[in-house]
Image (cartoon, rainbow, N blue to C red; front, side, top):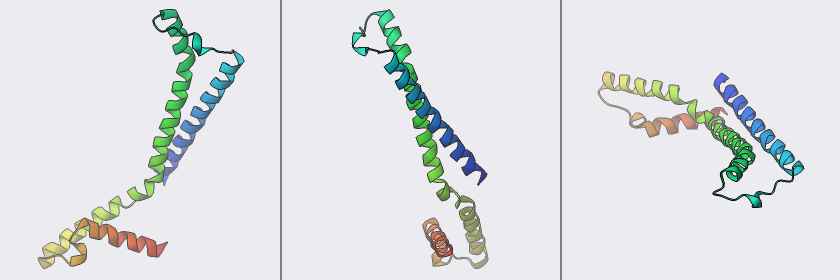
Length: 125
């Protein structure tokens, strides 16, 4: 729960910072009447001016991408919650094998354990 809250906060911060950076840049660029058509590649001074003007957009887009990546982590967080429980089930299955000498059909594969756990989660919800 704490990790998910941390990732959700990080996602929000990245997204807001990215949007704010791009919005401020657009307002700034429109107020200065920038003409990127006058950029001549090969001229060092012109290229430096272009890089100085366009770099805030790249930074804003990077923040938005970071926010999207973290949003994937937040969205997939529920699938990571079952890891400890599945490991416990695998260990229990190994203990059952040592006691009886064989496994039950339901516990032969990890896929069966995952399916069984997802079914019980669906019933509990």
